[in-house]
Length: 450
Image 1 (cartoon, rainbow, N blue to C red):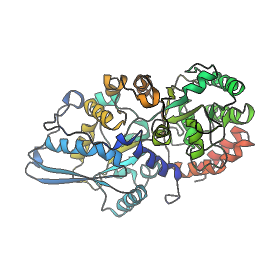
Image 2 (cartoon, helix red, strand yellow):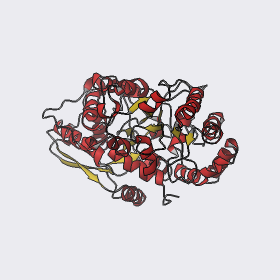
Image 3 (cartoon, one colour):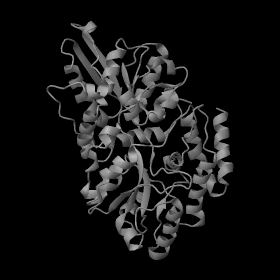
Image 4 (cartoon, one colour):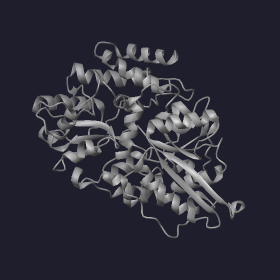
């Protein structure tokens, strides 16, 4: 199961490295005299027992974009302890190589790093037997327990085994302002029922599909329907690691997608990463598409580098009848401590927490566009006043980030998800002729047989 090709994970890793633009690779300028943020993290940890020692910690990562902020924070953290000859070495390697090397090192009991990146999809591989007990529980103070976003995906057996580092990755609606205006449709749209009505109107007025969902011939992109399940208060797996996508919320989502594509014919059945699809989203093809549901990591160079004018708008997701959520989340990368092999779990944990201060999270965003992972930073002026004029014009998209990202619906990735995701994509074309509940039941049955 672990060697099975999983395009979801591979492509997720790739897109998280490119993020919004080339700015994702700009390193943060180091501070000469850094200060431990004790008002948020408590008293600086006392490592006097290590005074005079030469200590090296290793950190494995797959993303140069994320290393661009982890590295300067490492240099600053080292400066906090001048009595120790401390070095945190960050090593980048290809994703597949890294995950396989990590698994091999954990199995053999040697060769693992002190700290490892933990892509959210990989939790279904490493935060289960036989590996789960080799990762350190990260203990948060009262401040971080309420301030840190997105703890659920990295929790196993009641223990927080990683903290989100890259960003909360909220899901929004990217839409063509010009096409919605031409069709006489005001944004944002409040509910999914109203979105369907708007799609029918758009089809009638200008003959353009309002959005897209990949169903047939899908190679990846299952995150589109699954992120809507999360929005509809379905975390994919429950607290007992049981796949629950076939409950009422799951059926509602997949039935809605079926209706948009086949009943109302207002959504295109297309791959989001297909170059032709991208051309249609930016308007260089005659059969345009008016909007797309996607996490913030998706558009980047796919769409934004192809436009000459700020034609896009950003909007919260329409609401489901029994949910108040207007966003979702998909993707993420945390940091974990390999307690079974590191000699310095206390130093590794202090470094990870140092990254989480609101000041450092704001600096991360200003240099790289990776959103903060703590609520206190999300509500700062740096985020609220953020604009991207070449894409969205005068819209203050930072206000949306602050308002909708602080309280994300729960997402849980359980054991076997890699295989389940493969199975969903392999069978997605059956949705064109099969009842949604029957189809979802078959996916859950597949999970139960793993």
